[in-house]
Image (cartoon, rainbow, N blue to C red; front, side, top):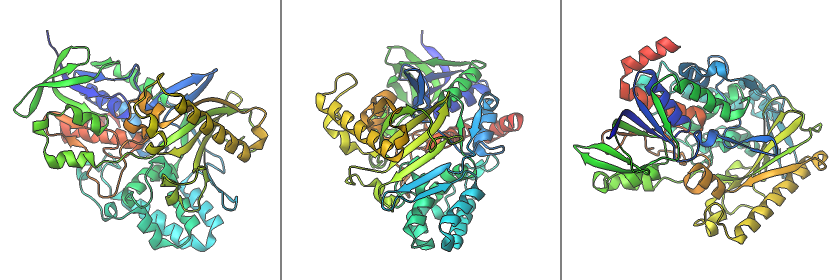
Length: 495
């Protein structure tokens, strides 16, 4: 007998969890499918020698009272289950420039961040103020940045068609200022000349306003969502994916064949996975050449080579809350996104304290070319050359950590390392790009209805990268499915 559901959601990262929970809230019978052995996607964590490390979620903005992520979590009923640790450190964001060793410590909170920039570059005060005015102007007029402004989704702004780089060039000739104002670009993995100023503003405003790490990291969020899902008619299956769309007629997929051989029926299916994986399932005769070319033109964002380490706290590392530190190998952040840059690429260190130890996720920018020689290998079946590469890269990053923090030499422990292939194979992310599809200026992302009428795309940077971006993308897709009145009623009830 063929099982029937109202909705199937494919992928259990934040986009899939959000879509499944929203649909469950309105009384739908939902099946959530996850290809991996456990749910959560990039929100997962792992342990090594008793130390817990986050994989892809380390800190977030928008969690201050009334912030967009705060509202979203309240809509889902998970906010009270989360314990955010808001950064109070004077160096919530720290930039260190290799050219002269100068350190720029920028605190959390927009007013404090703005003042910090002016402290280091007082002659650029007007440019700094104008930049933040532009960021606010974009977010105040952007759809999807407030629950009472969802009706305007699809209406682009002029700033959607001008790059962050062009805006910064128009504000100042000071290269250091441009890097300070675009530093959060490493949180979405696109060079300043390729990201639109509008998307940069939408992604970063919440980070300027507040910066928080959540106790127990992304795993706490996943568990909170699972507790909510248990209250509704939502079934979760791991190690499961759709192998084939069957009986496609009248522009609808009537049956969904799983890798287990089971066949399901559903009114609709929402994909929160990479566009390339969606394309593998769409019937060729249903996909126009223009549509295929659009998806094929998508590029991956940057990747990281990550070292997971811990040490005993030292004076330099005893900082309150989450700390983002960039070791910039060039004054111009734009050059950090060049694949042929020097062997010492820009390094991002994420610090936090836990049970008397300093936990460090240390990520160096990486590119597909770095691991191209082993791209056809799989976990446990890599050639020796790959392990030599990992060892040399790990040793080099260890040396850079100790150069920056020599007091940690006696206690620094490297627990694990991960290349782009590690990210690719453990998180089912093509190429191992940490932010999915690159958000290029003027790009028409895969979002909403697909060529088969009852299939939808909501994920992998369909809207914006990051936790808040994928959540709001799912919110918008589900709102379109259930209708604005029903969604408005849900928001009024929950918020």
